[in-house]
Length: 93
Image 1: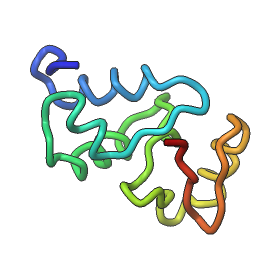
Image 2: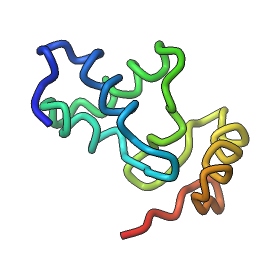
Image 3: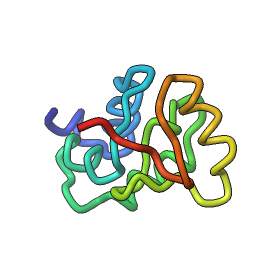
Image 4: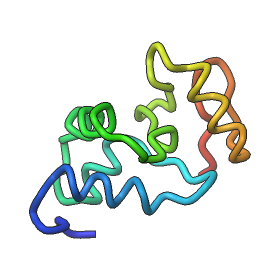
């Protein structure tokens, strides 16, 4: 996907909304998808400041869950059939 309207936050929100139940993406993948490779931390900032997004479908590159929200993150993911072990998701390749 190219940059949605040129606005980073709106593009990130749209990309995260497009993830279906059980789909996982990394912060870096979302950044690249919306046309801002290397802006993984920016994706995290957008998610931290947004409401109503399925934020739990986005994880660190190594599958790590959101620090401090691991239990909640795990509950959301497992409810969608995603395997979580040791504070990380097991991504399907």
